[in-house]
Length: 320
Ligand code: NAP
Image 1 (tube, rainbow, N blue to C red):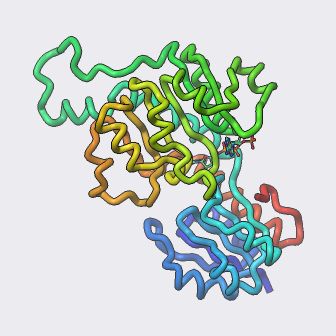
Image 2: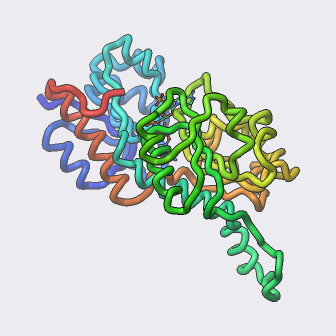
Image 3: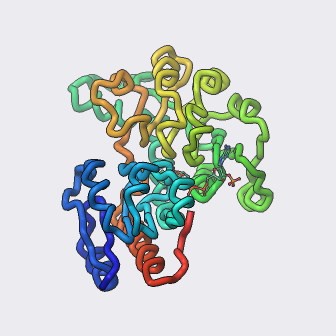
């Protein structure tokens, strides 16, 4: 009998065809709605493999009811939705989708930086609301990007891809990372800061690109925002929990920071009544960092290939 795989969201037909050549598939057949946890708990009882998304909580309770499960393949590079220790205890392999989304996410991060710096969304809203009366010397003026200083927190795959883009804008690039990266520094001409608090005051832009863990909850909070320039722009395309949203609201509404761009939120989807959404100096996106068609297909294919490998007795391609 073919191994059973549960897929937690409707995926494109090409991915399903690819998988169904190797395994028996069951799938939550909705595209825009996560599978309810109680249904997932029920479905996972018979599953040998799980293809899941960052909207699924793969926790101790879920895994304790999954006696046959051999692999949980996350269709994301971040895997903070999975209790990796609980999986390891049960010898369940966890895989993620690194690499295939790096360039797309770096593109989006730079786009968000540009949109926040140059007030693109606010300016578009201004025009559509009929407020454009005449070319005005200082109206809707933003911050320059060319030649400015970019601080990257987390010089991993996406951090490096972002730095390559920033070089094209003649930016000075500084970074803070858990470990120093001398070869990357040399190749891209980066300056390393061991101490984040030494780096923040020199940055015109700060982009955070570290994985989210409980230790890094609110990594960027009031103290860190206070250390930044008043003209600075903060961009978070990593995970919402890294930035203290209350502190960000205060910083943006009191002029302690010039602007921010968020692709990710502490709670997703963000509540439409959130005070953050009332701020004209905040550009907000619904977690679309990796959302090009080609990249999303590559992420799904990589998750499928990890499942096929593990369930046919081979090593996973991208284990966590
Ligand atoms: P990565 O290659 O693993 O890079 C992460 C970097 O963060 C590494 O260089 C790591 O340092 C550094 N780091 C970890 N903990 C740190 C700490 N406490 N202080 C300073 N630096 C620390 O990951 P990636 O592929 O670039 O992805 C980064 C994150 O982006 C993912 O975890 C994911 O959450 C997020 N993401 C979001 C989207 C989206 O749709 N918005 C898309 C893709 C990814 P070392 O080099 O020392 O390990």
